[in-house]
Amino acid sequence: MATRKTPRVHQTRANGVWNLSMSTDWDPLLQTLDELAFAQTQWKPAFQRLADRISQHASKAIGTHTGPDGYGPWRPLTEEYRTGRQKQGSRAMLVLSGKFRRLTQANSAVKHIDGKSMRYVVKSDFATTHQFGSHPTRAGFPGARVRNYMVWGDDLKKLFKDTLNEYGEERRAAILKKRGLR
Image (cartoon, rainbow, N blue to C red):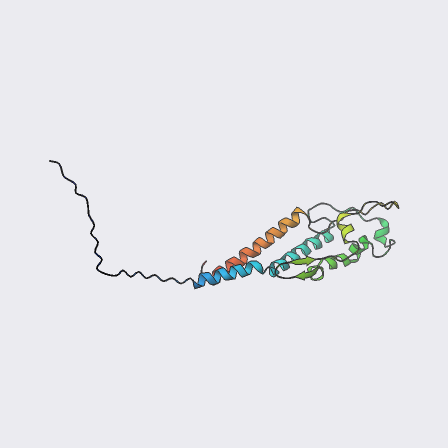
């Protein structure tokens, strides 16, 4: 004997009012988002950290007579420079006197820093020549040798990216922890 299937029919009755109530507390999350947005525009501590790292690289390069990228060691100074018979204020004398190390320290080199920008300046007539060397002139000057001390090029981009990413992650983690969301 076959069983006959009957379709199910739902009857609805409009005999009442449906009340649906939902409440959520978004305030902590919204405050966290506000803090994260604010933190993304306030990079002064990250720039200070970056300036300190640039300074550390420069100090190490000057101290070891090797470029921050590991290039070196720098060529030895000539007898004239070592004995001080060369004119005072030359780029080699900057290293020998210790003046160059002071010029590259973050507290001396940072000329401007705020939440959106940083200006790091090594103020010396020979800073560029020391970093990049110079080419001979018509007068026959043999050109200064490269004795790079500043992190530069792709290494600087990597340092910049790593420092800002590290700072951003630290800020994010601290804000989320403060809000109890992590």
